[in-house]
Length: 68
Image 1 (cartoon, rainbow, N blue to C red):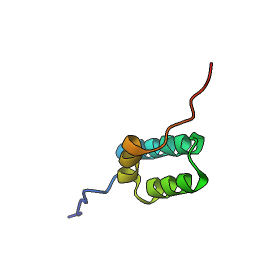
Image 2: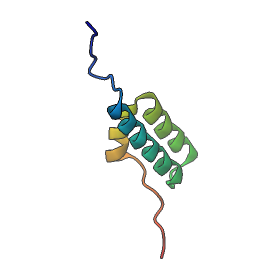
Image 3: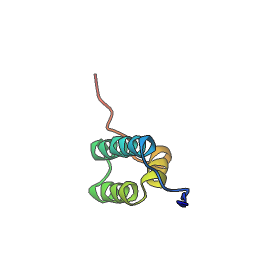
Image 4: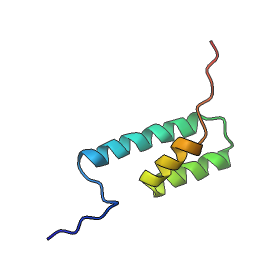
């Protein structure tokens, strides 16, 4: 029998996580944080996809505000 890990994502769940991580990465690159900060956030999201996304969601840098 195949062992199912709590952190194993495949199929639609993996695609959703990939889309969320790409969204986070785009927002990180568009933020006004320093280059070192961006590198740290990108590494966190890439190395730990699920946990990195959650941490970014609550504590990460945001996109630069667009002026009208």
